[in-house]
Image (cartoon, rainbow, N blue to C red; front, side, top):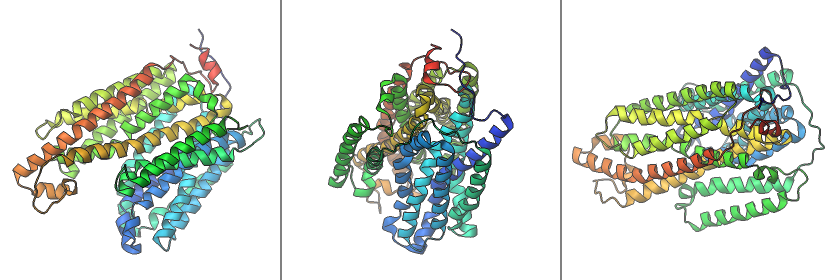
Length: 508
């Protein structure tokens, strides 16, 4: 059957679209870099303000706010048009950055980070939704792969840039640098991005927005319960989980009756949307959630130095780049994304099986191959959930669908990080090791580990290898669940121009 042809994109001039895309990527880089760039400056901030007990909240406050508002921004873009909703998000983020840079106390900084997050969440969702308006679905796949590169660049550059700017110009500079950048992006989008007025009467579902924000907040807090409350099974954490469950049930009740629900429940009756949401959760768990644990695993189990372990992340990143760019270009030609979803999760599952075989004497070639294979797998499907749900959802609900899949990916990562930590901690607790001056094996730094006698180093490596084996098995199981969802996807072909779900189904 012939490939469907749909409506033209918002901007038809290729040069103007490219310039707009650069402005969008600048905004994305600004919002995603912010959480990474702060990490290396936190010790300096604590040194000035004190309040070490609130150290973690400088990062968590931003993540909480981002998670809470993602679905709301997606819906607001559907109701009021994406241009001014996105510009509002950039304005909020820029103002929040200025307040962070001028903070006079730790409490002020944490509050300003919340304000930043309220804008940052809107930026990340709105960018993907605006891309859906700017590019036809096949071309969108290619440009989404470029967006993935920006996300990776912010993650790689952030810690280094944060440390350098903090040393050279003071920690306040890492926030204040967003002010001129945000202003330039605002001017660029204001002048060049057309306003497409939705053909509907705006009616905001306040109750649904509040309940969904509460649900997202509970997910992030519960996932971080071990750090905040000392244990995932702590009474406070269980209360948060119960509150989250009640919020979900209340949200479903409200959405069934809302005239303009934040996330229309009808979307979940579309099997493609639901399966891609499941896949997004699993991809977030094994893609984002595993990063920190790879570093810990390599340094403790194989005895690699931090710099040597960091070199292996070049292979991981290189794999992601190759997978993302290759998939983006091929999808733009064929219009088929299902094969890449299957290949992606298959590669990651195989990589995790390889990781279960790594120990102190493992050749570096095998370690590098496993890292590169996992990275390639992650890259292959990095853009699939977004372009898939944007194509599956009705045009009027593209923003809501985009917000949902973005939140699901972040939620999967948040939950997985907590679960992975619990697995490693519980397994290490079973290790019967006696190390002079160390009460808890988890307190060992790479420098302390290197100073231990050879026999103790081998014992620690063995303990960590045994602790990580069930973690990698769990990750393999998560990848398999995502793979099952990918296999169940319909063999949809993207239309040649930005169209609706109906036109996509016609291609099957």
